[in-house]
Length: 219
Image 1 (cartoon, helix red, strand yellow):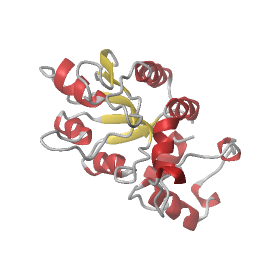
Image 2 (cartoon, rainbow, N blue to C red):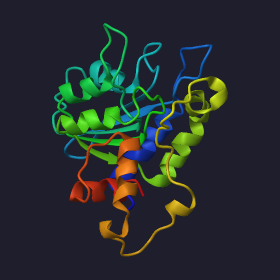
Image 3 (spheres, one colour):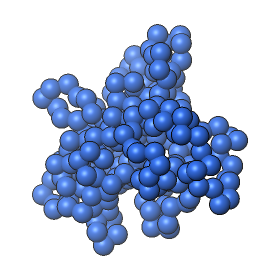
């Protein structure tokens, strides 16, 4: 299910911001991340990217704690190309916590983080804290993954030594992206859905309206 025109516009803006990201490491590829925040009135509040103002600063942190620190962000919507992190070296705090602390109501996420220590946990943390989570359109997810292929490979390719026994969700295949008209949750294998949710790190009842929404927004 494609996003509405307003959501799509801000997703595309987040992807544009992503391309401006600045890496801080010489020995490994850091992710390219773009973030956009929109008010309840659907007006743009701010847009930024990784490393925008300071070396190593995450996009969500820069947006919430730098550009919009003095603004009331309650009931706003965040569009971010990479799943918000749940781990940072002290005294820094994870982006997922900054999002919840700012009372952001809704978050659109591009790709899940390939880092097995984070994959799925950022989305689940937001859901657990009452943040509504949706996902970017499939074609934009493809662009995000393509731009971040080196970052993805760092964690997922065997030669990096980072591959884990249980692989993080890698996205649907070309065949899986083909639309099936008038499908319902009863058309899916419950075992397959359970495996899918486990790989995504999501705690959602099968079947449920919440699950259908996640599947629909994922394409």
